[in-house]
Length: 229
Ligand SMILES: [Ca+2]
Ligand SMILES: [Ca+2]
Ligand SMILES: [Ca+2]
Image 1 (spheres, rainbow, N blue to C red):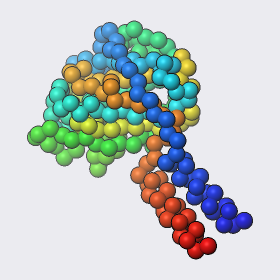
Image 2: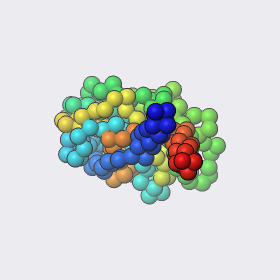
Image 3: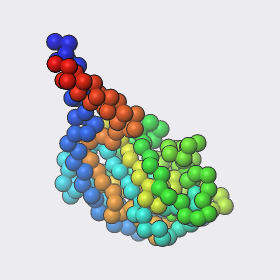
């Protein structure tokens, strides 16, 4: 019984981490107008998730297009994410998306997994809006619940720069039906940096690095157990 239980736990953990992820790309359209702080200029993009072919989603992953063009270099390289929102309100303008009521399913403190992209020269110690190691979100700076980014290299505020090819995932706090749901993201400056063709939604949570390590350990233990019997 003990062996059965430990095997089940290991297998279950592996299935949860490595299992049947269904990730689908989504298509964005740019809304009219802009929002943001000073000097404003955050462009807002909308995706209709009800046509994405995924019933329920557990996570959203945003990837910088890695085109290496647009915007500024150094700590501001890549897509500058001002805010992200899920809402049942269908907006045509950036102002509407800014004002729309969003679902409370994001955890910007513990529910983000960030793999920073490359900086264009001259490089800074870390990308803007990231934590001390440069590989986490500093939401005290980014404030991803708000489209409030200052599109300035002198007084920047309110966003995180992903870097060229950077990847930022959001594990939602609960499964969310995509029926009638819209995803809004803001790009500070709206200056040619895009992620629109590289965003996926998934019915699996994105494993954090420590979870992957735990899954690897579970696999090793499972194999040893099998080898010993
Ligand atoms: Ca940028
Ligand atoms: Ca913000
Ligand atoms: Ca930008």
